Image (cartoon, rainbow, N blue to C red; front, side, top):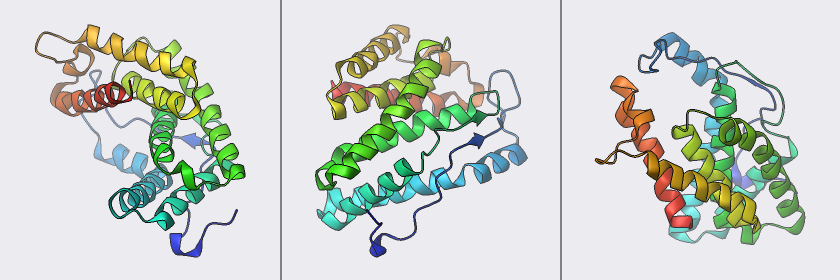
Length: 220
């Protein structure tokens, strides 16, 4: 299925990724501007893809524009056919792998809203691609992640959303476990220990984790 002309150009799907970290201290609170700039440059197609998907989803939700929903589906289908982020994740510090769980979570959430306009072939391809991402995300960020931080929370939200989309109880239960685990970690004031330790970036990472926790609560 070709992408409709009115949707604009689809950012090239990145199959392999080699992102380097940009925080220079042990707590992950100090950002090196040059490293951050390189990271953003290397991941730009992914952020451009997110941006367009959210633009389409907003137009569909607010103005009920079916054409916007079809554009979102076409973009997802294009990246599914391109095998986006199903290749070699390099870098060694989880930066590349983090893009996999962000892509899965964002894509699953938007597809859940627009899937009704997908053709049967598009639906098969997009869901297959998301499952392949999940098979990479679940072991790395859920099964073997000892940090249980904001990445862990977002992974839980993404897998739960995929579970709801597919009617897959296993993914839903993974999300429920992450949700309950995050609540158990919380201090009396609601702060999360893994994020409080992030120094000057603590509030930013706390907000990331909490947004995923709230999303999982909404899905439950």
